[in-house]
Image (cartoon, rainbow, N blue to C red):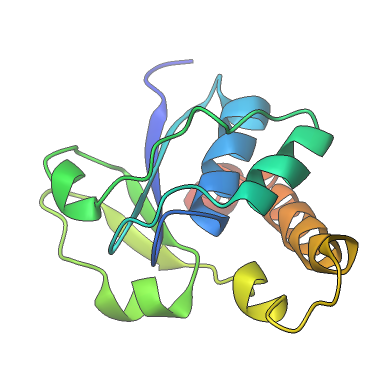
Length: 145
């Protein structure tokens, strides 16, 4: 294959959904896609996201929370916003980057009233699995190939 697609997964805080998307992409599609993730702001990594990804065999514990303004210079092919806030506040990217929105529920918001860690993890696992299913469609679902 020729050059890999450069894809940025963008979220509000780059702590959970975008990190999971980057992790799944490296794990499942690393031969076709060069993924990055960033946030409109940076919040550090979410410990539950790290935990549920590890359960699935994907280590995101060494990822860093990145502010999108720090990587605007990278010539991405696609920018995929994974939350509504990021879609509404996505900066303009120079070059040919095509911006696509594919939102996922916010696990921290879903777990605000969770009584136990296990109850909270149910939501994280569901979102992890939904993100995985989406990543498995890439890059074909983006390019129409």
